[in-house]
Image 1 (tube, rainbow, N blue to C red):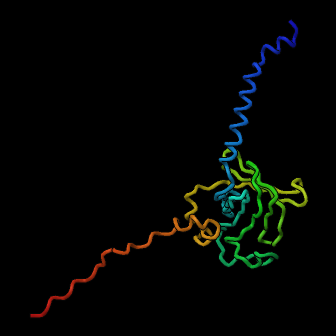
Image 2: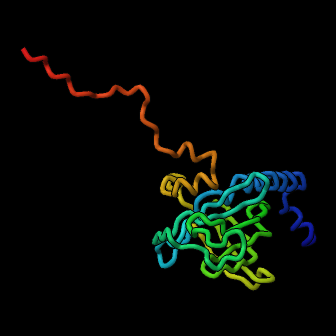
Length: 199
């Protein structure tokens, strides 16, 4: 028996290999389709939160990211050095990631704004297979000349901590569900009893 024949006996038969390959090909895109960049993300430095980023899906394959919260929160902070439609916009709530086109777990063709200096960089993003990490790469000319930031996904319950105006702007269909309930219209009014008539 030649070496080639011995090795070929150890290999699975062609139908089994083809079947396994088809199963993997069918399962992987479905898994990738379930995982998305949409959601609330936290950027940390030295173990402390720096910003929260809300990434939204515009349902046309395009994704956008807004600064949902800054730490410490400074409501007066604006993008004074921006040169486009974001000029003098408050940093909290600013759309700073734009035009990200989804391709499975990768997002390309977009750009990212640095609100500190108004510079806009080319950008791409990728989501980890488990959907818990988002890596943003801002770059000049080519992705090779860039820098990565990796953010952690926050639980959906943290959305209640985001300014309702930001939620209304980027997730208008969710905003009504997040408002506190209005007082009941037919709640009984409590009034003091009328004084007894004098005798």
